[in-house]
Image (cartoon, rainbow, N blue to C red; front, top):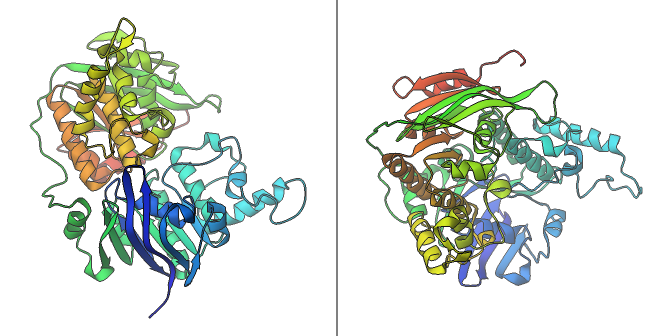
Length: 509
């Protein structure tokens, strides 16, 4: 029998009040791509952090082996020295350093004893790596100016720079465009041919079907099932993940369109670093009560920037915004909330949450007037308000008093959505609301979107997953290079038609 390159044997990791991993076992051979799936909170990220030394060996029970030898990892740096590369789910880069400096952060001097870093040689090393892997980044680029997707590719490049024997990828495609996903898949296939053992975590079953040789399903911190590629059955895999049968992913609803709730005219947002350039130019949009307007486009098309311009996170240089037919002046998110606009941000780490606060405090923050009287917070009222959303979204935690930083990425996303809805908005902007969310939770969020629309809320839905966008939207606006490039109703919209508009090019502004 071919030996395993990396093994996790009976790993048990306990946090206060929670068994995150319960005798979990994983085995990956050289040249094998093993998929790892499960709902948010299933324990996937925990076992990955044990394998990578983020959680040291004395913080859990069980055994980890590399090439048959037991290892006791004390840190992620030690894991890296032993040949384990790790790309975490959350973006983790140094924004004020260059791409090259981020890639070789742990080896800036290329093994030399020089006191100073040779930036020319560093950039040459980075350029060679980026060319070999097909990652489209400039070595000298300032990381602060990169998009979320580009920063994701940067983290992948940093992991590859260590020439790992084992590569662990935790939701690596959540922020990537279709083109970047295919580049990443080509890199993974090349590493497979070189004998690298790859552990690939994703919520996208299409990626599992396309890329993996074997599959392990986790639920509630335990191994549930394992499959070889020849035995893959998508329906059975989903049932194993969520513990029940699921008849359909996208719910149907009766569409009743009401009065116009939001209108945006000629919104323009200047590029913060490049003179005479715009992130968004001449953007226009109208959305009515009960309507879901899908905002489509490739990564970098300006969708999130337009949304942040409406919400007050970015300052437009031009443009008019109307709520219920009345012109409003939105200078910041506080103004947007007062006028009835809520937003679920794509980047929950930067804009969405206070990680050191409890779930209850994060959710209640958006509607303090409902729980504050004469300067005092009524704790009972706060708990009642928060419980409605905490329960409806099935946030997986021991209680509402748990810190948000202790939650899985998907459950953090649920808290962002709960906080937005707690403000009782007239208009909701959902920017990649199912990013990093498991299949069962996605279905819950789709039901919630339908419920909000049925209550007369106007919804703008931004998603890079075209099937999701097409299933949930009543009308589509497509963006390319910061502009609206096309508009389609539900009957005429196809994936090919949307992509045709999304790939249009314009003359410089």
